[in-house]
Length: 220
Image (cartoon, rainbow, N blue to C red; front, side):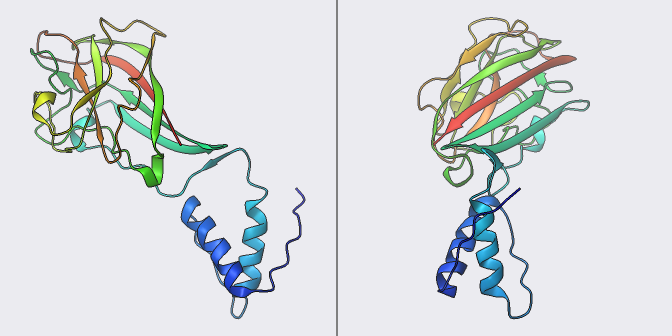
C-alpha cells in the first residue's frame, strides 16, 4: 500500500487532524518522545488511505442483560460505509421468553431487555433500515415487532406502551418466515432511543428454542 505525502508545518494543525481522526475511529495515538507532530502527520496521512468500510469510533452501547438468553446472543457492529454509518444487530432468541400479551417486551429475568441504545455520535441519525429473519422463531410468540423507547428500563413482560417515547420501528403483521424482510418506519429511531423486541400478537408465555433476527439501520 502506498501513502500520499502530506507536510504539516503547523504542529497544532497536525495534532488537530489526528485528534479528530482518533475521536471518530476509536484510536489512540502512541507518542514517541519528542515526535508528537511527526506521528500526528503520519496518522493524518493514514486517514486518506482508509478503506470504504471502517469501524467507527465508539463502541455500540451494549445490550441490557435481559436481552440475552441462555444459549442465545446479541452481537452488534457499527461501520462507516462512505457517508453512512451502518448498525447491525444480530439477535439469537434462544433462552428469551415472550408473554401472553400483545406488545409486551421479549426478554428474560427482571432486568432491562433493550438490544442497544442508538446515539448520534456512534450510529448517526437513523434514516431507515430493515429487519430480516435468518432463522424462524420457535417456542415463543413468532409474530415479533421492533420498538424504540427513550427509557432503557423495559424488561420481560412489560408493556412497551408503558415506556416513555415508545414508537413502532418494525411491525411484522404476522409470524416471521425464513428470509422475510421488513422495512423500518421512516425516522422512527430517535437519538438516544433504546431498541426492544416485543411480541406482535398475544400468545402463550414460553421460552424461545430457536430464532435469529438481523436488524440493520442506516445512519447519516
